[in-house]
Image (cartoon, rainbow, N blue to C red; front, side):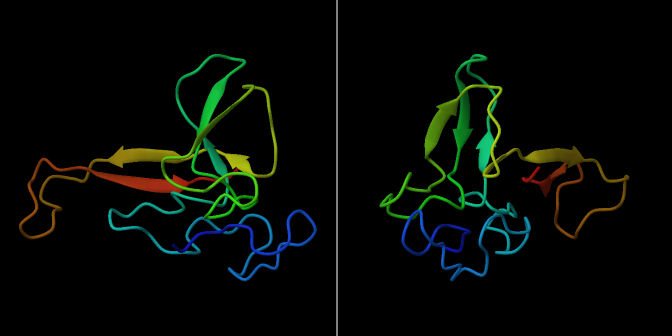
Length: 124
């Protein structure tokens, strides 16, 4: 898995073998098969739902590991909850939107009514 996660002795030193200590640029590790970046690691992402005192987050961050040896096991299925007022350097959100292309501007073989969702960023 290519992701910005903790490598080294926690919490003393992140060795940065992935090239980063702390957050990485959103496109550092390339997109997955459907064009999304940083679905695991880098920053926990606030998700819709929950209550003010218990808001969901997904994915894990740069202070987590693949196997969960330290903190959480980073995966697309990982969830945790925090107070909605909580802030930290390893928490962010994902901005995405659907962009409608002008009529006639489609790739060959693509349905004319298909829109694409583009990831803008997942860091604060």
